[in-house]
Image 1 (cartoon, rainbow, N blue to C red):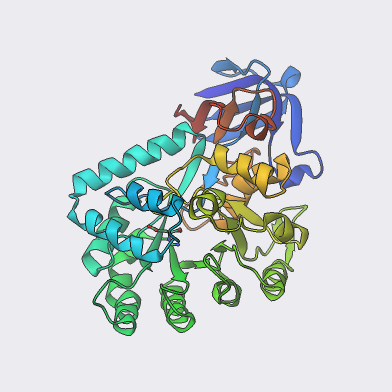
Image 2 (cartoon, helix red, strand yellow):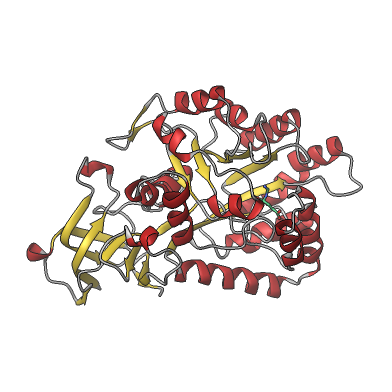
Length: 406
Ligand code: NIG
């Protein structure tokens, strides 16, 4: 079954192979099954089994949301209200969600996760990473990982999210690196550690990253969120695919991130990718942290991603439209830079920017022949409307792997 989407007023391919012309006007896309088969001028499009008229509207790759925490139960709106009244964010709130998550049955936890995945898809997200981290014991972390693996595209082990109350930090770190890692390993592709004051120290983070790397997992780090810290430097040292939050960066941190991209040709999208700096603007607003310095990172030559960080504590939204709008309005990114960070940047952070041999998945985050047919049609003539009309319902239609999701 092939589908032709034609009369696309503005097609943002985000395909580095198109060089300085990644945006096509009056364009068309043909996809067959889950695969993009053709992209080009609408007037030259081949016939297909069915045709969709985009009515001159704009189309983008589906959002690649590379940082979420969606496996949870419970509500923390009271904590949010207290924060808005002046209380600072503290990682200890994670324990509240852990208690509610442990108490939920598999059916309810899966239902909640499916609901959140559906919300994200309705907002244009077509590739979703999510993390464990609200189980915090061997059985519960394995359960979260197993449930996540049945719903989302990439699963990250975050046993090192918080040391549970009453546990010795060193003994808990041993548990994460040993039995917990072994229990989650069948279900996860990635490992993460919350390297922050009040969470895991540099030394504990190093132990977690070493054990997870040795177990064959890709690495990511929560770093430099609540203050300056070792997260960024550790992420670069371990060649992590991303370091996320990055609110408080020294010149050395920016330099280390930029250095990690020395073997990458950004214009061609080729070479060896470095450590993506993932900016989480919805979280920054909700925690009243300074916004991550996306402009400074781009100017230094660092590839950045934008992600929602949807979670019950610091960012209870999966709206990537909102994140893109905020990045343009508040972080100094241009519209194409923000759209790229939320599509191709997310794919880079998950190493999904090219087809992967490890599980046969197609490339996501950019539109090119052979890539996955993840398409986001806007109720607008251009992507600029995402920031020009913030908060408006601009997602008109979404195809995920060629299937109409919204
Ligand atoms: O990414 N920073 C650590 N983890 C989450 C917060 C989780 C929570 O507070 O429940 C974050 O912001």
